[in-house]
Length: 362
Ligand SMILES: Nc1nc2c(ncn2[C@@H]2O[C@H](COP(=O)(O)OP(=O)(O)OP(=O)(O)O)[C@@H](O)[C@H]2O)c(=O)[nH]1
Ligand SMILES: [Zn+2]
Image 1 (cartoon, protein in one colour):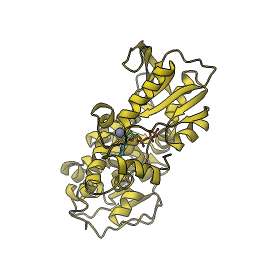
Image 2: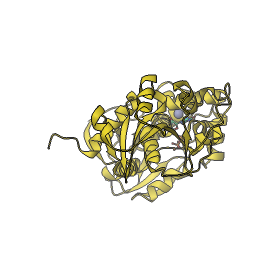
Image 3: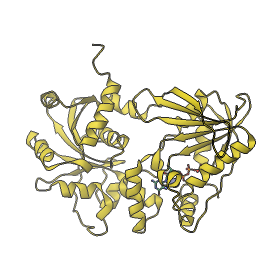
Image 4: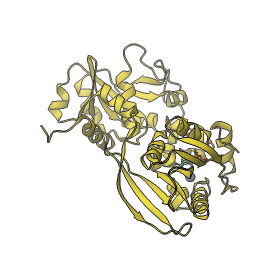
């Protein structure tokens, strides 16, 4: 028994299954279904699903459904009926907006109206958490035998839904000294979630007094900006300016949160960039992909600061949501410190969109 998988471990295995294109069984109240991410579906797996019975649908988020002109009868999602003669190319084209402009007509698409969408909703949550496009094939099954017969991972849908919304608990792994150009007295702390998810880092500058407000920054990973010096955003200069200010003041804490692309992952962010090359802005690109404007979970940052013993912060940000989130999750933001650096010809429109659509301070 002790060597068996816990429900949380099974969820992590299921995430890997989804990325591999292996179906996962979801068991809800009186209903079960096999679910498979549309982005990675193969002809063999599609045939295998169809052989098990009728009723195959593609679950899409409201945003993606809107672009495709599919009716979202379930509010936040649409269940598009998959016709028997449609193959992987059609499914991928519904999932991925890359060719929307070249091949706009994929329909007419018929959406399901009756029955429960609970399993579809949680399946979308699972593929999003695997950083895949939010489009998932769902095949209802009369009984749960298929999972056992094919050795597939089976998850309790209610437990999965609960886990996907739960606050991540992070434990410290190691910390070590790191002198940096911006600050000699640096220390990097690594934190690991108990559920096998991604690690996050804290860079502590000097020895901040835990009884006083600390100069703090919640930085979201941006491979293109932080590492490559992208001119499309302001992340790299913001990272360097935050560290420099902490160095000058002699104390501070910068959280480097691995929430690339506002939580959608680098592959999806590059998909968004490709759409931006077609003329869509940041927010429109996220919506066409089926994501919300911002999929980050800022509770992680709040939890990390609390774990490190901080209670009050002077927060370096232009994002009012970060201030609100910390204030409602056990921190006290005593001051917002503006961080306006790195404006370029290339990112002017991006910064304007952040101010207009995401409410960032100018
Ligand atoms: N999805 C998506 N993510 C982007 C895009 N450009 C930058 N990002 C990501 O956005 C995150 C940075 O968020 P921003 O909205 O720039 O800034 P913020 O963290 O909300 O606010 P500040 O604290 O003021 O910097 C990083 O994870 C980037 O990878 C884009 O066009 N699309
Ligand atoms: Zn960036």
